[in-house]
Every structure is written in structure tokens, then in C-alpha cells.
Length: 239
Image 1 (cartoon, rainbow, N blue to C red):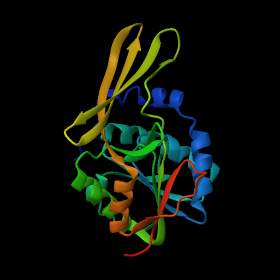
Image 2: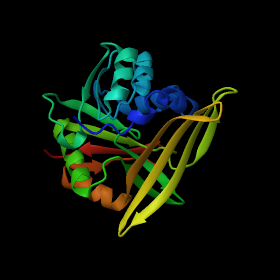
Image 3: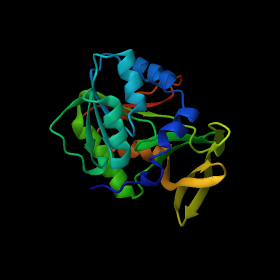
């Protein structure tokens, strides 16, 4: 069973992220990138909030979702029912007997974040060899000409959100450097009447764009990104 990074915050995760993200707007932007893709892999589906919005807008899609968090997937099953196939799987070791037209991630496994004028990949997968395997496994699950979309995120900024007079959500962020490695550490907290009721610390590996795209190219995925999209697109150009 993969490590459940979100077990400590699963009870308040949905309420927090819905304060921080307009999932209908994200879904609309993402669908604009789908083109004629019908078979979709959601890498890091979490509680399924984004997939739910996508299916409301385009119900003819077939979506398969994977995540390493059993606690978040349990909530996804409640919300999505049988509309989405869900698997508790690590993308670095994914072996499904399926092929997809498109795979996407917005922070589930990876997202792009901006540090000043520099774009960095923020990855929940911490070891470089595992990151390389994760991209290789995605490539192996894409049809010829299939695409990988990695969306941008603002998760590298600290913030607080008041749910009501009693509930406060907080995300604090720091950058850490250990040797030649750079990390983004996110600490999520939920307070009820000033009492801490949930907390989870998440660490993400940061890699520069050039390094990421060299890894992707090595596994057969090349950038076809336009400058006006909320992320980057990579297309499978060889098996």
C-alpha cells in the first residue's frame, strides 16, 4: 500500500481546498486542452473534486483516477460513485492494462510553481530516480500521440482561510535546501475555535524546468506548450 501523505488532514481537506481553488474554472481551462481526448488519466485525483467538475462539463469522458492516499480516495468514491475508476497506486510503479489519450496532474503528483520569473516542478515524489520512473510510467500508459498536461499551481504561497467564526484553515510554506536538493515544505493546519484539530506536513521536491523537460524527452515526451495556457503540455512522440 502506498504511503498516505494526507491521512492527517483528510477530514478537512475538501473544505480547505474548496476555499483555495475554483474547480469549475480549473476544469474549464483543462477541458480546453483536452481536444478530442476521451480516455483520461487523473494522476493524483485526491478527493475527486476536479474530476467531478470535468464530468459535469463533459460527461462523455472516461476518467481513471489514481492516488497514493487511501483516505482521500475514500472521499472520492463517495462523491464520484462509479463515474470514475479509482486505484490506490503509486504513479512510479503504475501498471494498468489501459491506454489513455491524455494524463493530467495539478499538484496530485506534480505541478508547476513560479519562483520569481523561474518555473519549477513541484513533485510529491521526492527521489529523482522515482520521478524519472513516474514520467516513464505515464508515457507507457499513453497512446501514440497522447499528451501529458501538468498544470500550474499557487501552492507555494502561505495563506489563511476562515470557514466561519469557528473554523480556520492555514497553510504555511517554506523553501528548504539540503545539499544540492531543493524542497517545498507545506504545513496544513485546521483550527476549530482556536483548537488545532488537524495537521499535515507535506514535502515536495523542486526541479528546474530544463531538467524536467530533459527527463520527459528521454522517456518519449516532448513539449508542445503554448505560452497562454495554465501549465505545460507534453506529447508522446515515440514509444
